[in-house]
Length: 474
Image 1 (cartoon, one colour):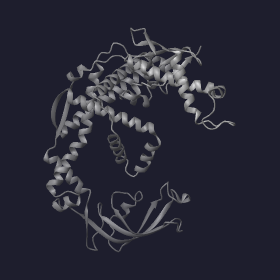
Image 2 (spheres, helix red, strand yellow):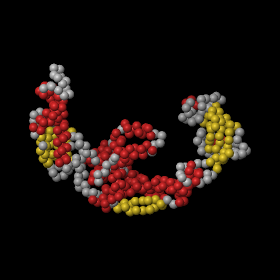
Image 3 (cartoon, one colour):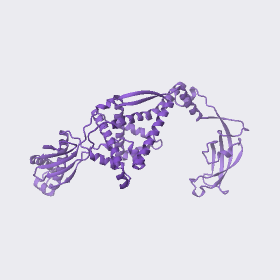
Image 4 (cartoon, one colour):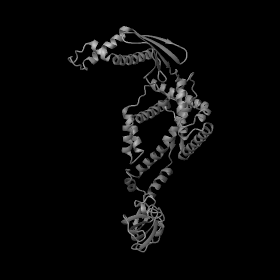
């Protein structure tokens, strides 16, 4: 194989590749030997069909298969030997080819630009830790205790009030007629929460144990018996008991009921929980600072084909007229995203970062925990959609890259209180909304595209597919 690189200046390159006739014939011979043992023809024993017969019947198909293999093998080798990383799919122009002939073709490719990542170590960013005051931990524990009331029986003469737990039996009718599901035993209602039917609770204020109370309520719109939806029902309620909420004692027993060893252990767990609630959001702020700094890095030339592809993504759902008006803004955003993607990709490759199957499965389990009750549906989605798994792999890969950059860059470590952390996050959110609003007014981007503007997705930005399309034959 002989390779000549043309257009050595700039990112667009043509590689002229020549494969001699002897090499092509050896590929053909290898293929015929491969298929000889798999073809059965009448009058010939398996594996004994003469080559000339095979050529007559299968020559065209064999040659096309061999040609595809040679193009793949030689083009991949040519790019690797010349250290060319393609940005997108190369184009093939076949000049000379055919059975018992040499092969000559030109591969046109846009090369990924060279990227200098030395400046990454000079990036400065804020790294936050949140100091949780004891009072914050105690406040959170009191809130937990408040949401886990301990109800206690009271005397038969005690009237029910807001917050009390009332247990009752009921039987309901609509227009004096019974209906399916119209009665229930030992129904418990915490008065004031209005969780049963709207306005039902208030009518039970003042009831006592053994009272009988008639309550009117409107059946909901989604009531199972369609013809009864939105109709007024009469509930005859027999009050079984009235219980008053008692203050929960915050002690070791309370802590053990929540899964902690004792109260001291519970306080430690709650403190860590509050810290974790802020950690992910503050870490994302740090990573966004890093990405903003990377946007300032200089790359001499951005591949035009990648810019065009990114603009298409940004303009999805827009009319041709709006796309044309916003083209320059989109190109600016596209170049920033591509630049960041190129730098992150190069950093990941130089540091041999990879996503292991265990890391990928851990992330999938994380996704499952985020959707309680729908775990099976989420798992089925990933099992049936390999592209979704690969997208998740890209997210994990990007996080690994940014985490390593944080280790190598210059962190400005800041310890903040919970209130300060909330203020920092609120200011960041307000700034993000302001930026989004400004971009919307400039580009009239639909909501889906607006979300895309704030993401740096390496997989979408950098595409280095090895497959090629033949654009002409002579």
